[in-house]
Image (cartoon, rainbow, N blue to C red; front, side, top):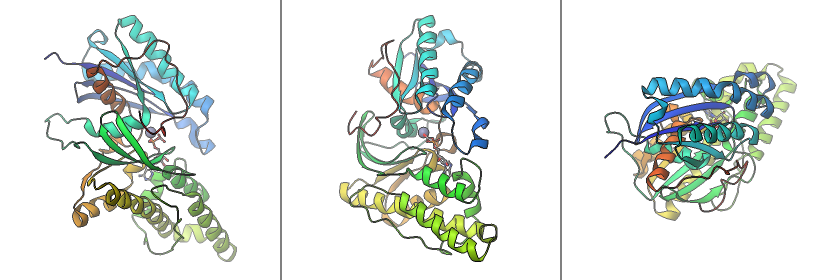
Length: 344
Ligand code: KG4
Ligand code: ZN
């Protein structure tokens, strides 16, 4: 059978990424991060779209070069249509349309959240990676989303639980900001947590019914806890940074794992994956491995390069749509929200 070459393009937030896949195997995955947002403590949408415009061509040229193929060998271009920042999405969408028109190949639209999940299907060079079988559960945790999803087929996914306020990544970033750590704070909390005691401080767990999550209460109690301690001990944060990071990470991970365990019990599905930026968190990864050991779950942890935003996940989703001949129209426009729709 002829090999299928897909170019994936991701530009939904502040990473510009291009990746080439040959069937389900990755040949390249190039990511340009945008340092411009650090000083603002969060992503500035207008700056993000400008940086995407600057980065998109060099990133695609680099991805083709690394893959060792010519653009004329591409079979299709898969791009993130949403959810995300509209200005950022427009850069990837418009580029994909023009590029594919020039090459006379089809375009494939991809949902960013589905792609995070489908990153588990990217096979390694040796073809030895264990890949989930349907159905499986996925906890998708990023800066914008926190969802528990049942995956019945590549594009048959049902969201059975989600956050009612902040996303898990947002919770990490907000508590990091309170401690004056740089943006995005998740990786810093993770780093300092490794030196601290997770049981040094306790924070109240939210009591939300069913499989939904809430993180805003946790963030507020962390804020008040620090405010009270700083009154009596002005260098409280510096002195207890590792314990604070370990304790708040433990609290966030506990909220996630409690609901995930509940979902496993409720559905009877014991194949469980995690995806999205927060799936890089060592506390969460260890908690998952513990469930594999003690509860008989089969756990799927993404490689670190597939945790945060990347185009390889867009390309793999594109590959499975290509096999189904599901192509997009040139009239396709980005959407900023909508991944939480029940079925797709
Ligand atoms: O999936 P992603 O790259 O972008 C979105 O689609 O939002 O996720 C970014 C989020 C940020 O909130 C970041 O702080 C968080 O993932 N993150 C982490 C870690 N690495 C990234 N959170 C906790 N621990 C980490 N190691
Ligand atoms: Zn993402």
